[in-house]
Length: 151
Image 1: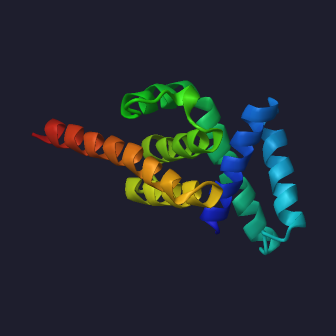
Image 2: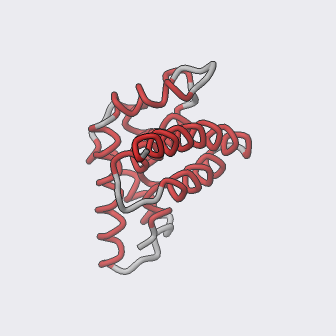
């Protein structure tokens, strides 16, 4: 399955939800339809269903845990507030934090690398550096806490 494509669609869907106040289903449907029309999804029907399902899992997961995710991100945004971030960076960070904290099938470093690529794809190279800094701090602290618990 093309997980990067699903993540791109998820970020766009989260952005659309925030901008227009639409439901997660409506947002994913709109973005998936646009991707199909622009032939970005060159997948077979079975593959398309997997991309759609994974996208919806991500969007629902971020949406359902957004308050907790935002509180966590606020700790690592030195000099920033979640609501003051660009809408794209906010959605990318939320998605990565969700994958790092709530999904066992995605290694944290993969979630970070994907977030960096998404930030650069939807923004500038500097966006990727910013996202990397925030998520890198989050990962380091989680690893330190885990090591402390093991002792």
